Length: 116
Image 1: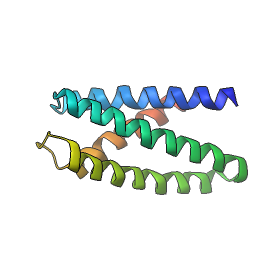
Image 2: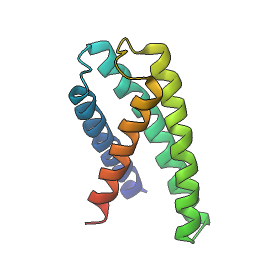
Image 3: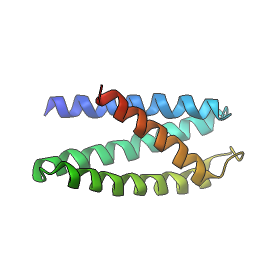
Image 4: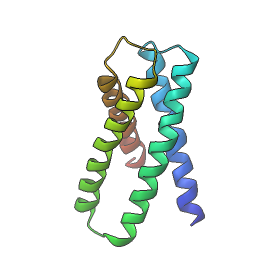
């Protein structure tokens, strides 16, 4: 149980580092916007990791797990898009595009890190 909790914390920290770093690269400098990105990632990342860790106890097929993960990642993109649309002052990118970029980068880098 402790290993799962520790892995969830590591996943969250890596996600925040990656998404905040790329937010800065994209020109997001407003402190409120950065805190908003951290806040929504704390919520969505913890929820998706908890759900996926639970699902892994009941489903042993990696293909099905990846399909479920893909569905949840799309949901996360949409939830974060709605949050960004309402809360970010940053307007250079459409909030949906921003959500897709940040989540694609953090997901892809996470896959690279865990498959090394």
